[in-house]
Every structure is written in C-alpha cells, then in structure tokens.
Length: 114
Image (tube, rainbow, N blue to C red; front, side):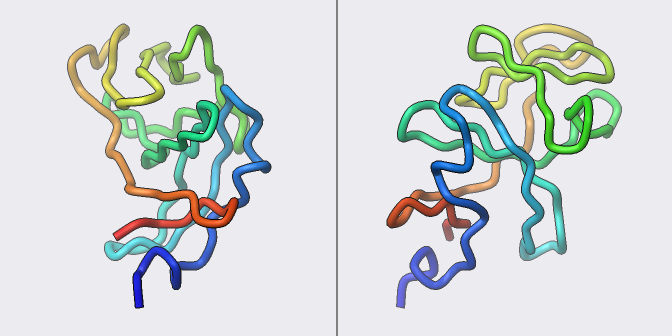
C-alpha cells in the first residue's frame, strides 16, 4: 500500500487559507516536529518551524505567520523565505533554507509523503 494513502492527515487543504500558512504537529521519522504548512492555490509546501538563523520558531504567535508578497517572514529576526522553496531571500540567514518536509494532497487532505 502507498505510504501517502496510509499516512495520518496533517490537516485538510481547506484548513489553510490560500496564500497563508498554519502550524501542525507531525510525527516524523526523527521524532515529533512542528511544521509550517503553506498553501498557494492547490500547491502545498511544508517546512520545519525552525529558522536557520537562530533555531527559533518562525511564528509570531502559535500557528500565526507573517507572509508578505509570497514570502514567509521570521517573526524573531525578519528573515524572509520564499514560500515555494524555503530559500532565505533576505535577512540574517540569506542563502540558507528552511528544512523541507515532503507532503502531498490526497482527497483534499494534506499528508506526509514518502
């Protein structure tokens, strides 16, 4: 059986407003992690909720993220990351990236992908 089909859903696609992000907890192979799940239309991108600059969470309040012009902004130090790639395009960690977590949308649910 395909792992995507059997993985526990992280959330429903409709739980994420288009152009925004939410935080979800996930059981990853290395242990539990908090993830940022961003939606751009039908596309979904997920990253560990850890800024490469200082190792802090990116949300300004639990599950609340700053997004401007397609960039995710770290609330602690202002680093900006392209939502679709996780690359830092401005701020103290320019050239670094968020750690991507593979996800897929299956029957309207966002699930971990293998």
